[in-house]
Length: 447
Image 1 (cartoon, rainbow, N blue to C red):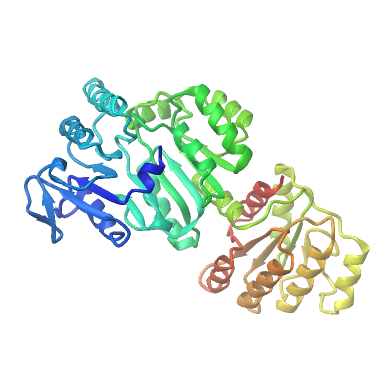
Image 2: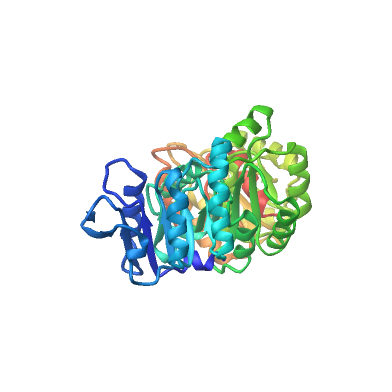
């Protein structure tokens, strides 16, 4: 079903405009950015041209076959436009427009009209009340998102379009990318279950990040989520847990949420990993996309004792085991003759605040060489002598030498630490400023 949308070679935008600040302008510009890979047609009965491109009064005037029609017109006009689109026998539909079931009885009636038209003609319909879709690899931005994100292996599926916009902006700063982004809105046609089923066979997607407010078909969701989670990790952030939140969800996407305990039980049953915040959703997804899975039993190396203590607390609360350092590992550390006389000789390995890159090198290599250490968190607090970029390069070399052991960074700092963070994340080692976030990311990788 979604293949017809993502693999469209001809796209018609109904509601194309060059009016400043409009949704139609945003979609028009985004579609034109990928026009080298597909044909774009603009429909606007009131303008001869939009952004220098010819317009058509209706989609029926377009002589060529249309694979995807994107609709961004006032809600009251949408049923007429959908009727024309299905008469044109378009391959698929995305209804961006809001003002449907989320607004009350009249909106619900409009939504039922377009849903019936799509169902009768077996035309996949995404939306209404959605942002659209994005596929960076295909240079397809069929949305009014503010930018095209980097290509990557995280699929972000969300009932909220606004969250997608913000996370795209954040991702451009943090160096991770997306395989697919889908805003599915009110589910008048294409449902969440259809999207989850499609992701099972999407070769570009390695991990799924899901934001939802409610589920339309509970039994279908359980089936689809269970099947997907057996193949790919799925992190889910559920909104609408409080009574006030449930009411807000109803007015946002027309979904009345069930008690949060029921959802949490379903997530656990299906194998989805529930998270509490957007930060956790993407921190864990980034780690899963960039690093291998591992067994329980990790190590921590730090140049700050306090950071080590915090991480031990977090590890214990999350059920992460810290492997005891073997005598062979201690001998390697001692033999190097670069360790401070006050270093900890245990896990977490505190190599003391004056640690230069040579000490980090010995510590990381020694710990990763121990068989029952399955992964490592490397913490760095910024001191005047800290060699940030050298430490990052050491970690990148260790990643190549030990490709089956995840490495998580916790470079704590800002301006002076950023060059090292940039090196790490370009080399696909995720960095987290907060020790708790670093430990949480490691926990997500443990089988």
